[in-house]
Image (cartoon, rainbow, N blue to C red; front, side, top):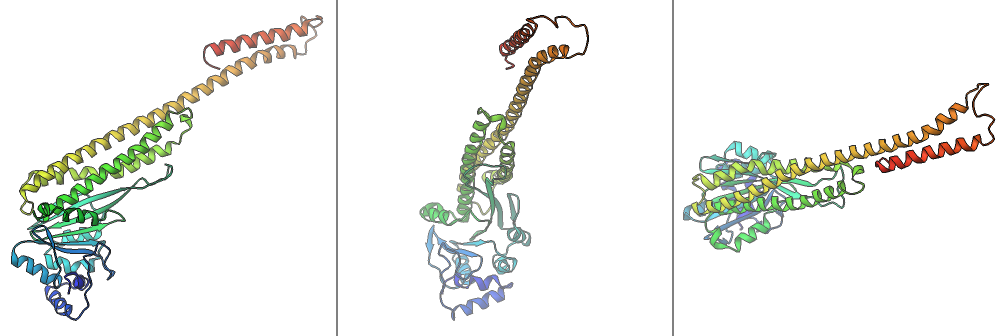
Length: 375
C-alpha cells in the first residue's frame, strides 16, 4: 500500500490515534499512487507526497504515519508533502502528525498573507507570494496584468509541507529539477525551501520583463503624434498592477535576509550562501519595480503636459481665426449702421475698395499668425 494512498483519511482525522487507525485500514484498500505530478485522483487537496533519502526519491511504502515514523527512526531522509488549497478539515490530521502550530495552520488554510518567515519551535514557516503575467492582446484601462497566488512552506528536520493557493505556481517542474540534482537535495528540507524561494523570485523577474514591454508600449503611444489623445486609464492600470507586484516583492526582503544571515537550526549552513544569491535577485527585482514606478509617473506627467500643450495650441488657433474674422465683422458692422450721412456711400468703387481692404487686412493677420506659429 502506498504511503499517500491513505492521506485523504489522514486529513479527516484529528488525533494520532485516529491516524494509526488509518494504517490498519490501509491493508484492506487498493493502492492509489498520489506521488504522480497530477492532482490526487481521490479529489482531495493532496497533489504530491514523496520520501527522499540521500537526495534520491524513495519508493512509498505503507501509510503516511508509518512512513514518517520510519524516516524518523532511521534518522535521515525527509518527506515532501504538497497540498493545494486544503480545507481546515483536510489539514487537521496533517497538523497533528507533524506537530504544526495552530497559528501557522490557520495562515496556511486561510491564505491572503504577506510574505514572512516565522519560527514555531523546531518548525520554520515561510510565506511566498507567487506572481504570473496575464497575457492580453491589447492593454486597456481594465486589463489584468499580474495575477498573484501564495505558497506556504512548513520546514522541519525531516519534512517539507508546501501549501499552494491560486491558479498558478505549480511546483511539479521544480520537483523534477531538484530530483535531477541529488547532491543538492541531499542537504535536506532547507534545499527545498531554497529552491522554492529561488523559483518564486525568478518568476518575479520574468513578470517584470513582461510588464516592461507594456510600459514601453504605453510610453511609445504617449510620445506618438496622437499621444495627447492616448487613454490615461492604461497608465493608471499599469500603476495598480505594479502595486500588486510590489506587495509581493518588497515584504520578502526581510525573510530572505534572515534565511541568508541568521543561524536557523533547520537550515543547512551551506544553503545560506544560496539564499544570499536569491536575496540579490530580489534586490534587483525591487530596484526594477521602483524604476518602473518612477517611469510611469514621468509618463503620466508627460501625457498631461502633452494634453496641456495640445489644448494651448487649439486655443491659439481659435484665437487667431477669431482675430481674422473680427476684421470683416468690424468693417461690415460700420456699413450696417443706419445713418443718413456716411462717408464713401456713393463712391463708384467703394465696394471694391472695402473688400480689398478686408482681404489685405485678413491676409496680413493670417501671415503674421503663421509666422508666429499660431496657425
